Image 1 (tube, rainbow, N blue to C red):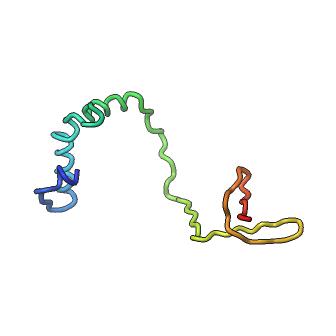
Image 2 (spheres, one colour; image 1 turned 30 degrees about the vertical axis):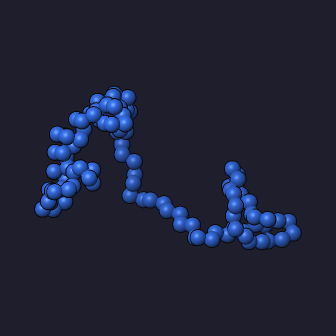
Image 3 (cartoon, one colour; image 1 turned 90 degrees about the vertical axis):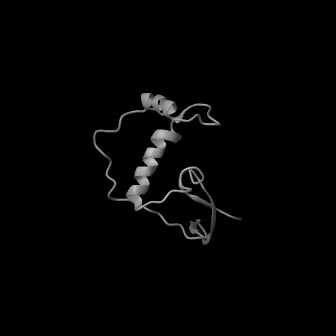
Length: 102
């Protein structure tokens, strides 16, 4: 796209860019034979649409998003019967417990 759509074009704003891009996809990009797929993208899209499931009737709640930020050098507390240590986490087991580097 950067070498076949954008060179030589000018855009007034982002809406003009999107309009020109949509037109380019409709008239050129999706109609030509794709070199590696050896098919036209419009044909592939039609096949995919036939097997895609419909969207759910109710949209999922997206107003709340949970983000977990992990520091560059995470440490976990390991509590044994005899000692409490902290060290870098190598793996997390299926139970959610972290295994420490020895």
